[in-house]
Amino acid sequence: CVFRCVRLGEPPRPLPPPPTMRLRLPAEYRPKSVGIDALGLARMPMDRRAGKVIDWSAGIRDAWVFGEDGADAALREFLSDGLERFDAKTKRTYAEHGGGVGNNDDGSGPKASTDRFRADLRTTARISPYMRHGELSPRTVYHAAKEIQAGSRRARARSAAVFLRRLAWRDLAYWSLW
Image 1 (cartoon, helix red, strand yellow):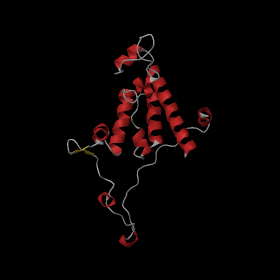
Image 2 (image 1 turned 120 degrees about the vertical axis):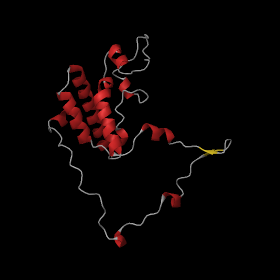
Image 3 (image 1 turned 30 degrees about the vertical axis):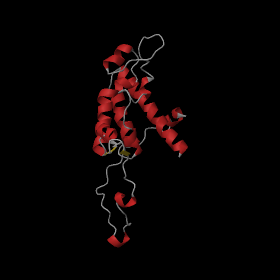
Image 4 (image 1 turned 90 degrees about the vertical axis):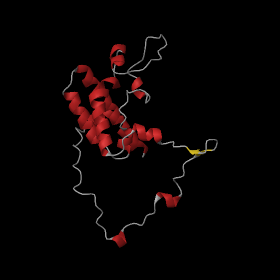
């Protein structure tokens, strides 16, 4: 299925950002809205024993920089530092790039090519939330990875090719489901 997509050619380059994001409707035509507090949806759970608010989102806020700047930084970090970990094939390569302790039956270390699915290791791209919320477009990711693939040595180019296939399957699955 992905190979048939190849026949369609390269996806177009990303569109430039719009010159302005201002809403130009007169005030009387703008949708009315209320703040989150008025909806009563922002109540944080309480730890009854300690009498403190449980801030369940603190870890998320610490791990992600929200917005387009965070998305850009995450993509650049992955392409410069994480791409080789994404499809590292040897224990040596995997360990050099921050891989964790593996769980192979023979104790020989990680199966690096499948550890890219583990979010607890730095073997994932960590760009999915940005793509999901429109802060990073698939076209931007595709063309950035394609540039890396074209100008890299063999192992890095192979990792970029694996990443591009995963990106295509991600979009195919999304559009198949919705």
